[in-house]
Every structure is written in structure tokens, then in C-alpha cells.
Image 1 (cartoon, helix red, strand yellow):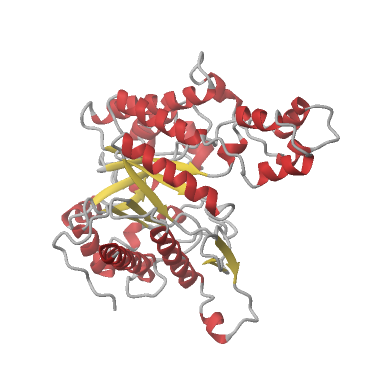
Image 2: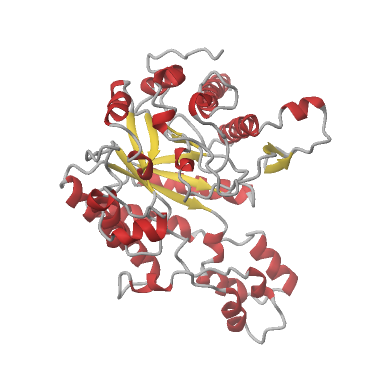
Length: 446
């Protein structure tokens, strides 16, 4: 059994616990042949006795919250939503619309007003949308309008930027010129984004979409009554690969073909304009009257861990200068691979995806259960981030599932079950407290 930590101000991290009940929707392709992975909250976490200890931990953390998706709210009863707040928890709703190749105003009208009902059918296969068409995502199962304490917007950049989907063409020496190589490499999967906000460059236009989205939120909730707005932000190599100016500078150095390929693939000469774009977005939102409460980093640690840590340090400093909170998505890095566990290489510097094989030892075979491997993976990630001083006592955390694992429905969400998301969250919170206390004690003795 885990021991509940003291409550007298001993834990300072803001924590959102966000299980993947989005995987109770058939339109959400989580990777198990289109079948449902998890059940809805009303059939699981609505039973508050199944995760009582975690509720207490969250209630004792500053701004502890239960994270749900906007799409899950309409499956939740008024009673469940009220019981969450009675337990001392905020509600943090992740809006599912913002990655879509649509104008920010259109997405806001969909999310908050239920307009453009055909989009519920064409994007989310909710046909017909029923009550959603009259009020958007933010309502309970009985169509009672609902305002969560926080709305977290999904990533938008660099998903809607032209990108070199055929990266290898950038060093294809059979093409006659650098221009030809770029033309062969780059694909624009959302060309209409260039005219969402005409008269601006693509980045500025996409930032404008955030502001349009906020304007519609104000129309729904009332000015000055919008829930806290937070943002997910990508930390991925694609930021460098979509940066045409940076690639042009690299090409102008006339490196040998192998050196040029190496520089691109291994990010040896990054320009880090993604941090500049983050600063521009936050400044624009603050200037528009709605500073983000938190920017949560959605990170690809596996491709190049050193690069990811470098970007996180830069983003952390940039947000501190803007007086905006730095957050981390603590999520499974294994994707749809059920037999995967996250490990750290012998140097302690690189995170790895390791596949557990059927022929391994009995102990390893016992650890093959997907839910247990997810718990082990997330705890490894947290320890790694504390050791590298990315996660500290000021970091906001979203302990979240958004792919296949853990697979849990009904009473399987019980926090006493090893590998359940609630058990994993309890373990992570206790790990963080112990790790930060140990680091604090070590610094005092130095």
C-alpha cells in the first residue's frame, strides 16, 4: 500500500489526473483494431470509492484536477460532475478540436456553440450530433451547460505547417538543385491554413486562430468568465524539419552529402525557432486578455533525448520570463505497442523504447502485462526528468493516458490494482515527492 503524504504544504506541484476515457468512443482509434479500449467515466471513475486515496492526493495538491476530454463531458451525469467538485477537485477539459485543418473561429463555434453540426459527423463520426449541435462539447449527459475550471487546447503547430514528409529527399543527390529537393520533400497537408488569416505568414495566422477560438469562448461563457485556458505544445524534431529558413542556412554551408544528412537527421545544428514561436503565441494570448494558465509540453523524448531536454530547458526559461507556468504531459511513450517498456540507456542520457520478448525470464514475462509496463514506463520517465532538473517543485503535471494503455473498464480502474491509471498516478506523485526531497537534501549538504 502507498502511504498518503502529509498535507501541510509539503507538495507544491499542480497536478491533473487525466485517464483516457476518450478511448470509450469508437471514433477514437487507439490502436486495438477499432475496438473500445476503456469505458466512460460514469461507469468507472464516477465510483469515487475506487480512487479515494488519489482524490485526497489531488485535493491536497495546489489546483488538483480530474482531466477529461470535452467529448467525454456529454457522457457524464450532472451528479458525477458535481461529486468531482465536492471532492475538492477542479475539472480540466482537453478540447478535442484544435488539431483540425479548420479556421480557429470555425473550431470555436464547433466546440462552444455546436455550430457547423456536420463537422461532428465528418470529423468525430457523431451522426447525428444531437444535443451537441445545440451547445458544443461543454454540457453534461443531460444537456446541462457546463463550464470546466480549465480548458486545455490541443497542439496546433507544427501540425498545420508544410513539412518534409519525404525527409530523405532533402539529401537526394540525384535531384538537380536544393530547390528541387525541397519541392520533392515538402507536403502541405493543410494548404487552406494559408488563408485562415489572410495577409499574414503561416505561423502568425495559426497564432491568430488561438485568438479567434478565445473570442468564441468569450461568447459562450461571457467575457471575464472564460475558464482558465491552458495549451499543449509540441517538443518534436519536426519543428526543425519544418523550418525552411533554418534548412536553407544549413544547405548554404555546402557540407558534404553525408555531413548534410547527418546534420538534419541528428539535429546537430538546430535553430530552435520553436521557442520563439512559443513566446509569440503566449505574448499574443496575453495581449488578447487571456494568458495561458499553463503550457504543457508534449514531448518526443525517444528520437533524440538530448535535443528534447535542450528544448525543454529553453521553453522553461522562456515561460518563466513571461510569467506563465511550465507544465509537462506525463504520458506513455510506447504508442500502440503493448509489449513495450521505457528504459534509460547505460549513460543515463537517452530514453529508449524496449520491447519485452516472449522468451525472456519468468520475472520479465510477469512484467509483460501492458498496464504494468505502462506504470513502470511513466515512473521511469518521471525519475529521468527529475534527475535532469526539468521537473521541479514548480512544474505543473498532467498525468495522462491518451493511447492504448492502461486497458481498464469499470472496477478495473481501482487504485489498488497494480497498473491501473489511478495506481500509476499515486505511485508517480509519491515518487516525485521523494525524489524532490532527496534532491533538496543533497543540495543542502553540498
